[in-house]
Length: 473
Ligand code: NAD
Image 1 (cartoon, helix red, strand yellow):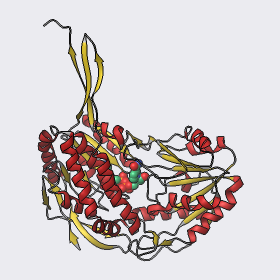
Image 2 (cartoon, protein in one colour; image 1 turned 180 degrees about the horizontal axis):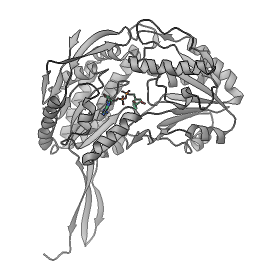
Image 3 (cartoon, protein in one colour; image 1 turned 45 degrees about the vertical axis):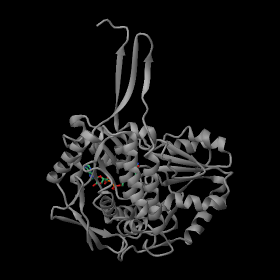
Image 4 (cartoon, protein in one colour; image 1 turned 45 degrees about the horizontal axis):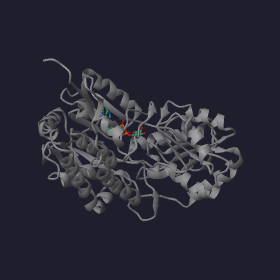
């Protein structure tokens, strides 16, 4: 078992109090991290504030170089990092590798983003231009499903925009992030990136801290609402990436054999613990029987187990609370007599938070397992008749994160996509995010956006400077 330290003001530190981190595959302690509170937070925020004075004056090229250094540190240590990530998060090695390389790639790509000045007026009377200025010290709060990716998607745009950051990983998955902190200690100027760990109770202290100017948060909608409330005291800027209940819509012209496997992974990647996983799969009645059979057949070939073992496709649920919540939803479906194509029948006792691959056969629309975000290896297949009906059913959610349409007729797919009330819609793929396109939720899936120029702007204020050219002074 290793003790991991926080990064505060360019130094690796601990306070002598520790939180234990478990491996969800076997419930063994795999590491300890500092259990911080208000004192350590104050120190980190003060360091970020001091560093901001210089960092905000740096050129785009200097910032780009630092961020590329972060990308290189992650990439050069990818083998160690992905193994550690599996140990604390549970995801299979191949998916952990994707996350680590994805985070390095995101950092490298986003290091190149810039916010150009806009000229509003340039004539004999005035020169007016809008420039973007960094908001200041950012508080970043991240969840446990993609701990490294989420940390990087907060740290990188903050630095690129000229801000400094205090980041809090989830208490369930802080280890890989703290190992990265160690690796980048001498890459980032002291105080620009501070990573501090603690229980959930550290979150509100960040949200309400008077010397933090902006909160960027990824997590549940329930916590997002608390953050909005906490940040309202001094009108902090906020970006919230929250939950989703994404619908996939499969039209009758889709090739059953070809889409079955893709649909499976759109729900079961990372054991379904993905905000943009397909959580409701609507299949046209003409192909419903064939496609549901093909998906259930494919599911038989996928091994649920310890993510560090070769051949595992679906790992454990990341933590006990989420494990119990997913089992509760499955139990509710059983109690209501819904039909299962697979899963729902295994005794979940034993070591490790394993849930069998669970596919439901056309449960009612108001079933909890359909209407709520499952965030686990659960896939309700739902039958539909007409396009109008399926659009209405897909939109009948408080969430609006993403969705997908599967069809050979891509024009039709786009026509449907334009009627979905979500921030992202894919035609014939899933979960693809570009470093250069905005990603954010409609309705209760979020507030603001991450990624791309739109995401970067959220770390800045617009400032308009106008020179009166024909003035008499
Ligand atoms: P969570 O909201 O419980 O926790 C997220 C983070 O917030 C953790 O670091 C936690 O310690 C902290 N926190 C908890 N209470 C807080 C409070 N009152 N104030 C401030 N911070 C607090 O979420 P989770 O269970 O870790 O993650 C799962 C959820 O995240 C799912 O709903 C999922 O859909 C969502 N998610 C969304 C996205 C997205 O981009 N939209 C991505 C990944 C996950």
